[in-house]
Image (tube, rainbow, N blue to C red; front, side, top):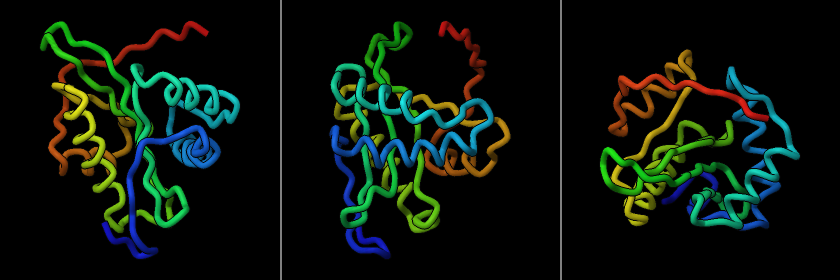
Length: 155
């Protein structure tokens, strides 16, 4: 994809991407109601995913050499579908690159990657008050689920 800053590429993240991904997560978590930036925790989490591809994959969008967006896919199995499924997490685009199609391209690449990994469904969570994100995902085929997320923090 061509982007205002040059060619936009999307690839699997590597360990060398972790600092830039942690910066992107800091932007995301600063705007979310339930989470706060915690660089050591983000480094650990990113490393766990990158080092264990059976857990999931991180995709990073680069405009030239700069990481401008990311999205995570975490894998599990749905007994309802009898198939592998993905949880889409941590979708974020750097503010200077929003509105230029980076998010749409990154999401399309994530969906294609999930499909290539044999996933039968992609599920995501977004803040209830983030109407913009909800409209974005709806434009890309996501629908509301009647399921209600509940959490129990163990740490």
